[in-house]
Structure formats: C-alpha cells, structure tokens
Image (cartoon, rainbow, N blue to C red; front, side, top):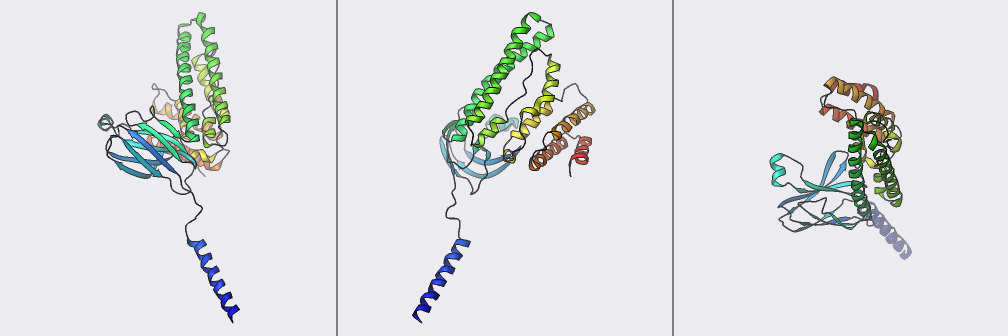
Length: 318
C-alpha cells in the first residue's frame, strides 16, 4: 500500500512537471536589448521599429525629456534578423517642411547592442559601442561612401569629356574610372567575405554594381548597366526581405529607365521593359519574387500607372 502511495505521488509529480513544461514560458528563451545614449535629444518619443522594404513596423517607444537621454529597448522573443530603425523625432524645420524625422538604421541579429548618437546628426555621429554586425556595417558604409563620391566625380568629368569630344583627357579619365570601379567591387566582395556568418555579409554582398567601361559613351554605359545589373546581385535570400536591400536595388534599376523629358506613356513603356527584366531575374526564391512583385505593384499604383499595374497582375501574379 505504501509503495502504491509513493507511486501515485510520483505520477502526480510527473504530471505537474509535464504541465509546467507545456504551459510555462520558455525558460531557455533569450531576449536581447538595445541601449542608446542620445545627445541634444528633443522632448518626445524615441521609437524602435523593424523594416521590410519601405514598410516600417513599430515595436516599442520610450518617452524622453532631453537634452541628454539614455533609452533601453528589449527586442521581442524570436525577433528576426534584419534591418531595424530608431526614430528620434522631428526637428522644427522638418516639421514645418514635412520632411523625414531624425533617425538611423541598424542591423539586429541576436546580440545586445549599445550605441551613442546625437539628435542633430544621428547617422553621422553614430558610435557603435557593442555590435559585431553594426561595426562591420558602418565601417563598410563609411568607406563605400568615399569610393562612390570619387567614382561620381570622375564619372561627371568623363561625361563632360565625351560631350566636348575632348579625346586628350579621355584615356586618363576612362582608366581612372575603370580602376575605381574595380577597386570598389573588390572592396565590396572582400567586406562580404570578411563578415561571413553575419547577417551583414549578405547585405554587403548585394551592394555590388556592374562594372562599366569608361571608354563607352554615357548612353552606351547606361545600356551596359541595364544589361548587366542583375549579373552581380543575388535575389535568393528571403532573409533580406527584412531590410531595404531588395527594394533599394529595384528602385535603382527603375530609375535608369526614367527621364524628365518623357511623357507618362513613354515612361510606362520604359518601365514595362524594366519590369520584364526584373521579373526574369528574381525567380530563385518564390517568397522574394512575391515580395518584389508587391513592391512594384504598390509603387506603380502610387504613380497612377494603371496600365502597368494591370500588366503586372495579368502576366506575373499567379
């Protein structure tokens, strides 16, 4: 009888323990946080949110009084890896002109983050205290911005050279332009390889651009850009939907088909060509394809290009 009572007691204990395991919160679940110190902060709310292309989803907000503030956010359990945004608020000028708020973007992928910034220049003054992802990301962005500025400067001179038919300067500028492009391309690939295993590696990888021959005219380079754009990019990773990588790339491509001199009908015709090329090059992953299709439909609806919206729905929406 005593043995039976002990057996019954053990069985009840087992049931209670099993019940706790089933219905209690995951004791092993780990949450991560963001600590942010802000100088010159205006009174108001500091908002944390996630990005999915151009869409911003609010996660949390904290009221601050300024001028120097420290805010601490906790990311929800099982938060996805991706690009997130902190919105600090509006300057008086931004409010009056209805411009974007003071904000900065960062990468989160299961690590605690510690940043410092200044409300007046949140991106320029951003300091990454703790975060492997963002140390790599912002180091890349700083160097890449320098390279792109140099490239743009040389490209403008090269275009002027072609316009004036100045063959005496063509060789030097074309070679310089080609070398800068190759330097940047090697930098992008090396930066991606150096950060393998991090989310930022895929973000950086998709910053590549086609290399255009400086000995081509501006129109010829534009044609080459359109033809080669998708050869250096990868649209197979659904994780990058949680960023602006895909939407930024698609927008950059579409811009090359536009001209202020075009009529609305001409613009629609050119965008139709762009859409066909885009859709032919994003077949690797169904989720990515659906995401980009939705982005195109929404964009052309905003532009009131009904014929193009109908064309995409008819030809590409299953």
